[in-house]
Amino acid sequence: MYLWSISPKNPPKQLTGYLSGHSYLWPMRIDILTVLPELLESPFQHSIMKRAQDKGLLEVVTHPLRKWAVNDYGQIDDYQYGGGAGMVMMCEPLAKAIEELSAERKYDEIIYLTPDGEQLNQKIANSLSLKGNLLMICGHYKGIDERIRQHFVTKEISIGDYVLSGGELAAAVLVDTIGRLLPGVLNDETSALFDSFQDNLLAPPVYTRPEDFRGWKVPDILMSGDHKKIDEWRLEQSIERTKQRRPDLEI
Ligand code: ADE
Image 1 (cartoon, protein in one colour):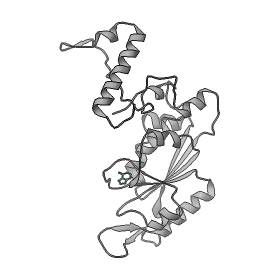
Image 2 (spheres, rainbow, N blue to C red):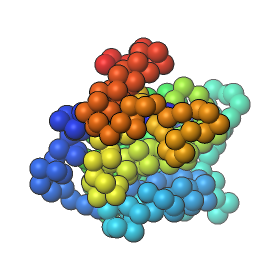
Image 3 (spheres, helix red, strand yellow):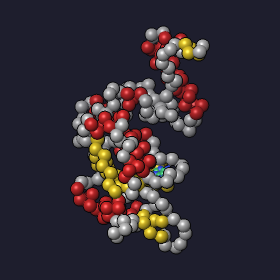
Image 4 (cartoon, rainbow, N blue to C red):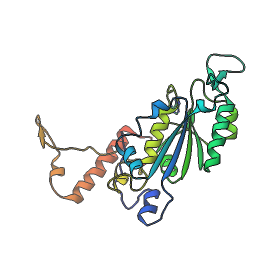
């Protein structure tokens, strides 16, 4: 599901800045620490994320955490103190990795993807899209040692109330939501205004050819050519949908 705004007069901040000529320091750089870099090979090599990187607007670099393993076996996790099933990602590899990467560039945020983090929404994506350098940490097993969270991590993000096998897919989601907001990434700059959560409105229904499919017709209003009326109809549909499906969203 995606949400939509009919209100170009109220564009999201990052686009306001861009459209008004404010220049940000691009490309945005996102480093990702992961035990499974293979999982992140594909998500950024297609479609909009690929275009963002090809255009030099976004740079995504994955770092295999085992590079900083505590021994030659590539160990990065250990049993948890106090007992219980499940391994915990150790302090040392994470601390060394974060310190080494932080020596190269100053991160605006060091983000840990975790189901007990703040739930991702468009507002968070908007605000992160204004940053220059982000470091993301993908957890696995029981998660990472609490001391890393306390002493290095600056932001904890969940992509929803469910548990994934690891943080990689969550990181891919986060990179995608941020990456598509970077000005110049989408073909039509305004499209970010019209297809996102910006105004807390769900998108209206959309139709394409043919006009009549098995007797199921496209609403007459969309064929009318009256753009004012079409805009009004879309807004009504959006509001109606939002009320029905997401009464929790404040319109
Ligand atoms: N890691 C495991 N589950 C997650 C979730 N829901 N969000 C972010 N990171 C996760």
